[in-house]
Image (cartoon, rainbow, N blue to C red):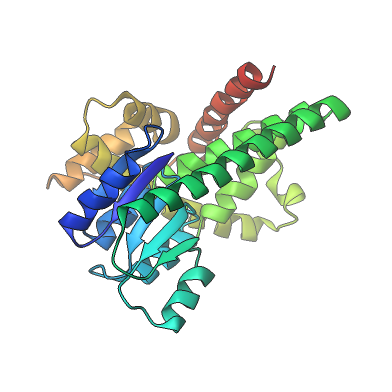
Length: 289
């Protein structure tokens, strides 16, 4: 299991890390004393379980859970706090908390709770595999449905990585890419007005919303390319989704150079996103068959 720890105390960060890593199957992928840094990290990292303290800055742990929920980032959550109110505990559970430790941290308890959550996640994973295999055996369309679900899940992970899963155009992107995956068609082949039952004017509004969202994705990806210039995955995204020159211009802009930004090609983005989804499709054929 992949864990992330957020706590304002460096002592507590170390205590929790030590407790978790006593189980060699646990991996602590990140630690932070800052709520905003935690949110930014979880948009990019694969995190199964978040261990978060309520008392964080610049916003508290409950606000962090709400932001993660809005961004469709839903890890299992262990929240900690000293002498919290009943209303706080209730609000935490309502916003996705799985376990609430409301007293001084104890390494044995942390280790025990992490084992319970890991077991739950493993059971759910096993049930999904059984369900998918059962569907494949009982239905001639089972394999196709499973593969499509994996493709869409991979697309969702990609959009989360780009930091646009909480933007207004996210749902529009998902509607279009679902059509492309279901029909195995390129962007220019899908009849959006017919399939989404929209007018040409409504289609233009959707395209504008998507372009604004993709601009945010370009800004985020350019920032990552500046920080990690040799990362091949980032370069793949830059080329396949946005055309590298758009990322290059944004990188120059962030470095203080005034350059005219290019036009975002929706066809290039969606066709690249469809190709990206095929990675999950190829993986599913290897894993299940």
